[in-house]
Image (cartoon, rainbow, N blue to C red; front, side, top):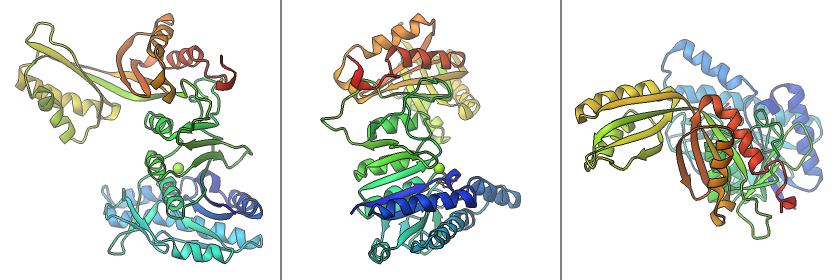
Length: 411
Ligand code: ASP
Ligand code: MG
């Protein structure tokens, strides 16, 4: 008998009909002899509605009270789902995060889970009940309600799966798995049957918003097999696990991209110790996240150029900061571009293969796509290109690496 933790997202529980369909699904898993713990999100749109209410009262709502408010969304769905299960003759119990002691730190609105008491859940499972737990919420040391940040129900599910030593954590959502890239950009994009935690982290952080990133790293840390699947269609979805010897290893698993990028360049800064810190320190202090950083060699032996990327929303602020520091440092010029995007090839297979980068650059050259920046890591190669080339770049790479073909039938 297996223990499965299932998480249903907002659209999957977006109406009473859909909650009924979720109940049917849960019962199917039960009838196949599994113990089931279900984590649910708030009904779709509900968390946003609550946020709007709070913002109508205050431009900066008190974080503690915001958590009390936001946690109600999930409380509605746990009750409705448990009723739907009982209505169908399936014993069920709903619990809020604090009732099952999902202990977090006290960082309201972005709390982190510290520990979970599995006693109550295990006792219910032993009585043959389905246990329904509110996602996205916990309780701190002092008994205050906390929430885990947007999309936090994924993390609740993974944390519960880890605490209960579940056999699998299934994330039901409105897509049927993780794709080689966004099917809206490349219609030939293929659903992956498996992907490693590492690859998924790269895909997620690069903009394939299927799962909350934190939940993926959590699952990796505790080795919880994670499966993404559709709540609306049958299918095996995508399994996220550790690399497996027997796994037919694709060279490249997918292409991720990020539209909301901007880059900034400081030209002609003195090439002396401490300059990178002087430039980037104030940017970090302003809470602006910096992604790719490139420092050029100093061609004249005296000055060098710095380029880095930030989220597009932070562009104006970063530019302002740089202009101030550049004049203090006596740099020649600050320039920027907020019409750029980042496209990345991701694959653990590239560790053991040469020539991936050159194939990538060749494919882009053939289409006349100019590469503005390049950065690499062990399992990823990213390029920055002009925004207008995004679709073309992603499509040509998808084709060049034959990602529409399953790895088995590739020679
Ligand atoms: N309801 C929360 C949100 O909309 C948490 C979640 O759905 O995972 O962000
Ligand atoms: Mg979600």
